[in-house]
Image (cartoon, rainbow, N blue to C red; front, side, top):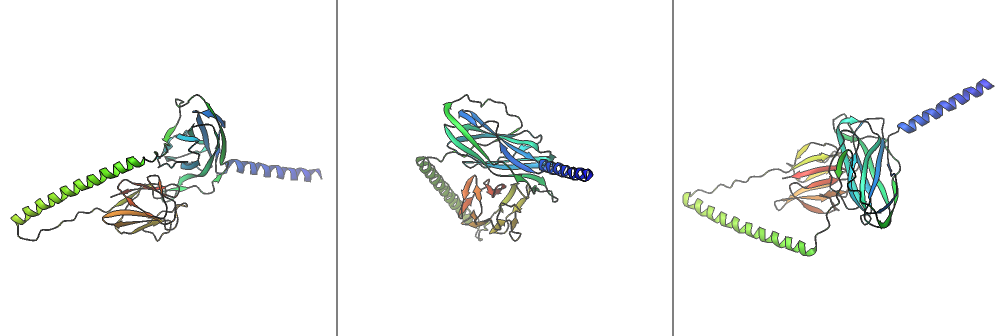
Length: 329
């Protein structure tokens, strides 16, 4: 009887050890903070932690904050070789992404994120989303499957009493600026800018007409044949900067061009946060436009919701959480 009891206890002990080992090695990301009480003007520090049995080549995260209470400063990753990828920031949402050219071990601190406390308030920091990235068989960045999100919320208490500024505190690792978007320009400034633009267009149109008249007169005096009109055009391009197909460039030689996760699109972005048909790029009145088709779409950090917006060369477009491309024309 004693031998049977000992055998059962040995099985239970082994089972508990296996469970404990699996719990420690499971892939996960969670939020933590050394302290949650601050004074106005002090630097608030929160930590993105990660654990993975698989070496990673990058990670992303989004943290929701109250812009009336906190102002993001920067993020820094202590993992060797991890470099920050600047992304357009939205007020109230820190959007950070890091990548490495070689696989790195992630068991501990992935990044430290710093904010400035703006005033007396009680607020929360919320980990909206996070992912660990690996390189798939095709050589493209892809999210590591099975990553669990642990602690998501940090409650902060910020006293209205002014504390000591810690902006000079040394930060280790690759620093990623997280400056929020600038405040909207006053209406008077907008009208002045609009007036200058209109005047500039008028001057350019007048010079163009004068040039065309002079050219037509010269051509008529030197030749009686019909003048040949030569139209020079350059197809617009998309350069993928982050997400699936990172580093690839697409020439938009067929418009309209649909972009989304569905393979029937002209450009397929296999990202879980990109919907089947996410956006459409089309031409109109000698210009290019992007139309949101129901997903999360941002141009230069500004949200686009089921409408169309003119595209200019150099515009940064983000689809979903982290799929990023630059438009060129």
